[in-house]
Image (cartoon, rainbow, N blue to C red; front, side):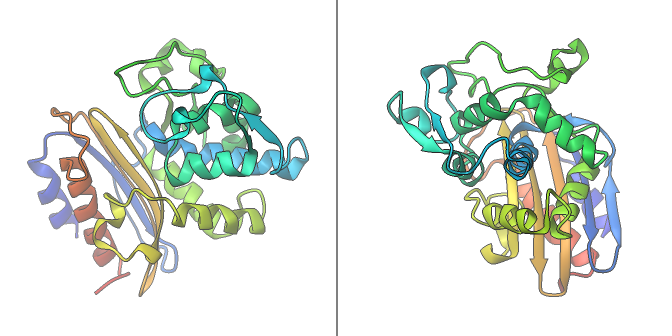
Length: 278
């Protein structure tokens, strides 16, 4: 596996960092797994965990209505920006939109409600100190909003380069493993978060060559970046993996972006090498 993985990334134009763990055997594999990277939309998984914490603590509830405002609307993934200002949506639906279609506007609505600092406090519970939500989403580069909704970490000059958030491949895998073990907020909350991740509609990366029902995932995309984190329920074992690719020279938002293709191929290698597939 190591030879195959390194051969696949050797000629690739971009920086590849990855980590995977077979949750049944404990076997692991990584390349640069402790290096801090731009999280892009994979930070929406920690944001979701923070919402479940807030609901469990009683500071909000799933039926609380959140009002769609013009200042929360941003370009990029999602559809809520097309809806009328003043629309009231239950928090449950906003969170589903944030994950299932990676809605950027929904993400801003959630951060406005619970704060980016609450996301980071939730990650601190699990010792995931490199995983930081920095601020709200600005958009996709064509019509950027002014940055807002900063966390304390997001105000630090050294974190500006991470944009929306930061993480490491190993920390994302740790969070996924804790979800699968029922240790994020509660066993019931963990199961519900996994169910939402299974409905996530962007499967061009880790899920590219896999059966849809095998994959509970959250992807991320920026001009030079593609990333994906997933629990894969393969026939011979459960594998948590995180694959992050950055510094790609060509902007391509098609499903066949070179980063997506590489992530799909690497996912297959990791599953075969860690004994989860023939």
